[in-house]
Every structure is written in structure tokens, then in C-alpha cells.
Image (cartoon, rainbow, N blue to C red; front, side):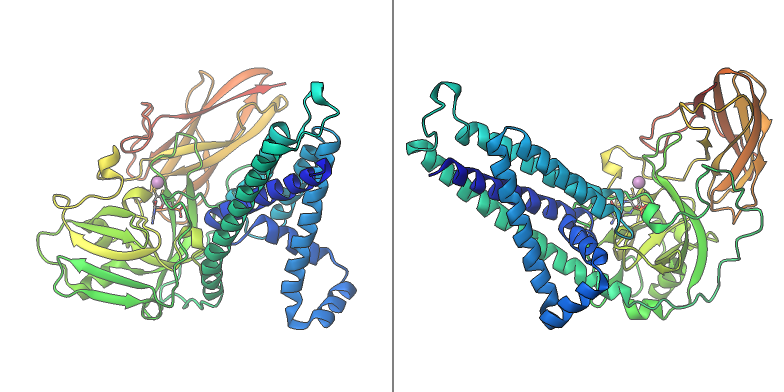
Length: 510
Ligand SMILES: Nc1nc2c(c(=O)[nH]1)N[C@H]1C(S)=C(S)[C@@H](COP(=O)(O)O)O[C@H]1N2
Ligand SMILES: [Mo]
């Protein structure tokens, strides 16, 4: 086999495996955006409309498959070129792969609604392709210095090279096929989701009060956009739950089991409310917390339909993928008004955040309350059942602890001397925030300016003007909840029931 032919095959197979691996990673981590489709979409978006019209006219409704086929052809040509380049000079092909990786990342970045997860796929694709090609070159194709003039790809080496290429091609086909199947399921659901018409709320959230947004640059937005909302779950593949066949069942210690489908749920009188939810794993100063406007039906009403029997003290909610959360029955029926949420910030729930329905319970960490892709509510007891995280070192009860965070200045910032505006957010869901105080270096605690609150269940922005002289400084923050309790300064790690301690930021005034 000619050496050049070997490099072409190596380029095709190594890049093929890389691209397929990237597609597979994308299919499981980010249901709506894949590197190949993002690149394709960018090409389509960038086409002059004349060319687009001409192509559509030429290929009719087949234009999509023709386009896809041309993309695969182009990728194959580039892959062969990468192989030949690497054969010319070690590192040339790898550099080419690096360039395509960067283009993939850039293309993903242009898509609407991308999460940081979406960037993993092009990185994986480039890394896998590059590592494979380097290895194949070393192992089979690069003549050792001493035998420079002998053909290297002969006899047993050649057979083993051909076998390796065959295995690689097989892996690429299987991975690509799997990604297509996973994505096809997601596409159906994405499509259904796009057609959901949410009911208007029977009880709407009060409008955002004047003065709820302080407008300090760098401070967290009051309402977290869905695509910036933190995501935590145990799901390897984002569940693509078909709302057409989805059902929610109420089981356990109830007078009658109740089953509800999505259309029936949407027909219930909905309430709309701002609720800040947070993860128990959030470190002091961390960003595993977000605030959204949720639309949903009070859990209390569904439990009333089923008739809760005496003795029950817990509801074990279960997701379609088997995750469970154990929530105190009282927290689902009391005045905080926990809901079965179907809407987030005006749209249906994003797939990543639990489409078609999830629980939102003010005041409780997500691991004991916020079950996404909700499938079942089992009325039970803490003695008889436990949620997913309880046997894994986390407390059975998870009320959200009072917390406050400095968003500006950031660690390592170097503002000029004079007056700087510090700011951030503070939250104590259910209790509300009555004050925030900051401490500069060893100075006294001083009151920050508190924004108007949306309600007791949401975080509140704060700001504090600080006169700072040149040199290094440390700023600390603490919140005071609605009952007047001051946030503890005692540091605690997230496990078993939530981190505590003051958030501090070091910065240097130049
Ligand atoms: N099905 C399911 N729901 C889940 C989880 C999960 O692992 N699986 N994790 C919970 C945890 S620990 C948190 S903090 C919240 C996070 O919700 P979000 O991803 O919408 O921000 O979801 C909760 N609901
Ligand atoms: Mo969490």
C-alpha cells in the first residue's frame, strides 16, 4: 500500500471516529445542538440568499438530505487532507484538526440557547481525532529513521493497520448511529415542546417592583434566563420525555390513585410565581442557584384529589429516569405553595430543566424537592422511604440556608482608588431578606443598600459604595433574614445539609 494511501485512510478513520464521538457526546449532553449541525447551520446562515434559493429550487424538499450528504463529503475530503498533511510533516494534520475544533466551537457558540455543555462535543471530537491520528502515525505509518527508504507499510504491519482502520470505521459508524437514534428521540420532543401552548395563570405573579433591579454592572441578573440557569442532575442523557404519552401518577398512602396526563395538567388553574432554587452542593460564593418565574399547579390540589391518608409525612417524587426526592408532606401542602411546574420564564420547561413537568418547592434545596421529568408522587413516610441522595451522605431534610454572595468586585479585580460599587445577591427562601451587611478589611459591618424584593422566596440584589485606598483588601458579606437572624459566620462544607460561612473576596486597588 502506498504510504499516501495509508495516510488518507488514517485521516478518514481518525477524523471519522472523532466526529462521531463528538456527535455522541453532544447527543447525550446537549439535546438541541451538535457540532456538525451547528457548522451546517452556520454555513446555511452564511449563504447568500440567492444561493439558498437556487439550492432549494434545485433539490426541492430533498435539499436537507443533499446538504447533509455534501457536508459529509466535505468532512471526508478535509479528513483525507488532514491525513495527507500529517504524512507530509508531523503535526501539520494535528494543527488542521485543531483549526476544525476551533471552528466547531465557534459554530456552536452561534446557536441560540447553547449551554456550556454544548462546547464539550467539539472539544472531544478534536481531541479524539488528534490523539488517534498521532497514535496511528507513530504505530504504523512513520518510517523509523534507520529504515527511511524502506516502505513501512508491508507484511504484518500492513495487516494490522488494515484491521485497526476497520475497527475504527466500525466504531465511528456505531457511534454516529447511536447519536442519530438518541437525537431523533430528542427532536420529536423538542418539536412537541415548541408547540406547547401554556395557559395563562389563574393567579399571575405580581409585576417586578420598581427598585428590584439595582443596575450595578456585574451583579447577577434578578431573573436568571433559562439558558444561564445552573443545571444539576444525575442524568447522563438529558431525558427526552414525550409530553404526548407522559403521565403523572399519585400513589402510596392515598384514598385513590390519580393519574394525570399533560393536557389534563395544562387545563388546571395555574399559579405563577418567582422562586429561587439552589443546590445543596453550592459552595459559599458559588453559582448553583438561580431565580425564575415558574408556572404550575399547586401540589396541594393534586394531593387533595388523591386524598392523603393519616400517618403519611413524606412524598417521594420520582422522575422518569428513576431519580427520587423525599419532601416533607407539609412543605407540599402549606402556604409556601409548592407547584408542579410546567413553565419557566414564560416558556415551557427546557428539556434540561425537566420538561414536561417538575416540582418547585420554595425554601428547600433541589435534591429534596425539585424533581425534574416528574413521573410519580408516592405519599409515604420518612421511616419507610428515602430519596436518592439520603443514603449517599446527604441529610434527609434540606431547608435552604440563608446565604449572600459578592458578585462585584471579583476576586483579583484591580479597581482604581476612590469609591467603588460592590454588589451581589442574598437569599433566604421562605424567610426573606431584611438586610445585607458588608465588612471591608477589619472595619465595622455596614449596611448595604437592599433592592426591593420580588417576594420572600427569591434572592434580593444588594449594593454598597465603598471608599477604598490603594493596596490589598478583603470584602465580606452577610445577610439577615426576615426573622432578624444573622447569617452564620461558621464555615461548613456542603455535605450533609448545605455550606455556611461568609463569602469573602480579595481585590487590589491600584
Ligand atoms: N430527575 C432529576 N431531578 C432532579 C435532580 C436529578 O438528579 N434528577 N437533581 C436535583 C437537584 S440536586 C437540583 S439542585 C435541582 C437542579 O435543578 P436545575 O437543573 O433545573 O437547576 O434539580 C433537582 N431535580
Ligand atoms: Mo442539588
